[in-house]
Image 1: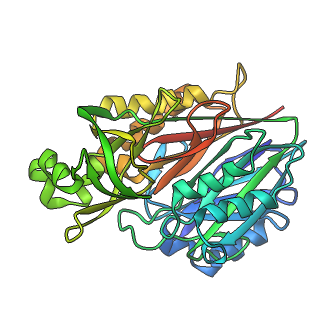
Image 2: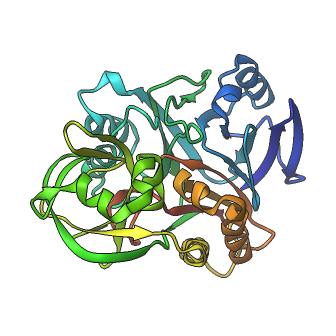
Image 3: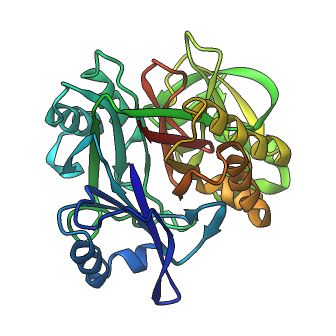
Length: 378
């Protein structure tokens, strides 16, 4: 695998890293992660398509761009990939073309040839999609438990409009699946949150998919406000500081769920992922050292073996970025310390992260986690 990375910042392109043997004419895949107002400019797509004539160009808008161990805003991070012994296949659809998000995932998975498939990497709209249902659709037609990873596009902290595309100027509502093929390509993954649980474990007694109404038979919103204290008046923004942990049956690991909006009239909270009735939940709060340490854990889980990975794609949550603030770079440096200088790193801050909880398990939607996918071509 040969990598070229460059960066659009302050209205100009800067070369960041290039393998001396990289060939733009042979490049098969270009990942472009950037601010919505920049990537939707037609001239950006035209530039990349001209630079990499046979490549599939995949865009995602972000809540912050990752290049190496640095985080940026209002820029575009581009990673061009030339595979030497492996191949890719890309497919896309619009969320309006299927009945629901689960059918969107199932449709995309069905488009990928399963023979030789060893990973599916998803770039999804982050506004109109139900991430939990999307991964359910991908898992439905994955008997070989091929790893499915990726993320939901972002829009800074605005939660307004996200943009994605495959071989087109980015627009709203698109979901892209990238299939990686070949025995020479080894792909690994890791995901960790680092949030600290507090308060008693409680049961969800009334919910509708990702809308939560009652915990332990009482108003979930009232309970949340009671715990938030002075932060309650800043809802829903302050909820990024206090996500929920969701216990998963059959696993010792837990998912993290973040509030997107509240409805005072209905006394409900809408989360970025589903919260099934009967599930066990606990409130969580930020611990800076644990958040940064979780990035190290995710990177360690994604290490492919004694040799360095060629590429690491990091997808972290906008909530982590808002909480860590000036210390955001530290979670990237923690990952860099694990991978070393020979691994190219890129990624973005998202509205949801996609990864299995454990090796060999189904994909799950995560919130407030650092999720890393590594690629190594032998």
